[in-house]
Image (cartoon, rainbow, N blue to C red; front, side, top):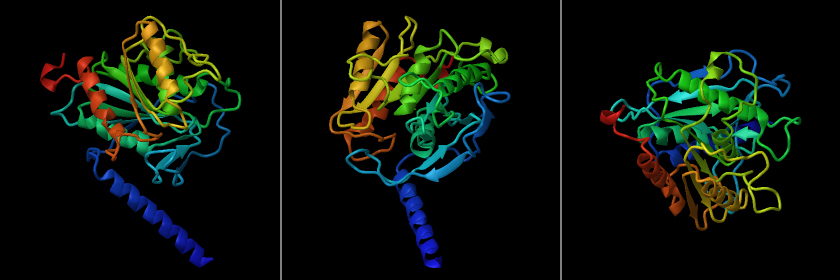
Length: 321
């Protein structure tokens, strides 16, 4: 029995070491501890807390045919108390822009490291605050299938309003609050960017009187955007006239969330006259995150930063309004 335990510990240590080596090429987060804030003042709407204790674990090693980053990465699941984890950029780079980060995980888990912390580090490197949204997962049995998961959308809507309400305190421009998501988190980002006309919960306090419309959205290898067996966007996703600009990126060989999800969303946005940009990277699979890997898909971060600058969200600190 002792030999088995030692072997398991060794494998876990090797997995952590490999993840650290893979992340070494990317900018690290600032030395200061991030600020962690609860999204709701008490129990979140529709939350009965009957899913067990919140858990952090390592993902299994994945098949290279399915994903670009196959190494184990840290996951969070069984979330009943949503939080914001706020990473600030260096003062000399701070543009005043803040971006909520929605990690993916199929609405079962949150890929906290690959699609949360590493994304915050990238955003900090281009002068934006990275705010990781720990939204509620797994998806509960009473959620309507085929439509945006209600509890995660409640958390995201509240998070946008909460960040905007603290803009002065956190030195954020309230007109420069975006949202980025990956895989299922990309679906949540799109749902948040298109569902601002009506909240999915009864107002809790004064924070809920503040707009929950993000100023821009970024969706990367998103799932759940396409209707089943139909070439149209999924039920529950509507595109109001005032939908903010949206940037989409996808892998051409993604078999987990095929690129049609982003292509159809892009066409629907263009039809609604919403500013949108789409990048599909031939031969790229799922889960490439923001890591500088040996594939052109890793260039999406550069394209996205250029798009953000063009939209006016990455002005130098000297030009902050």
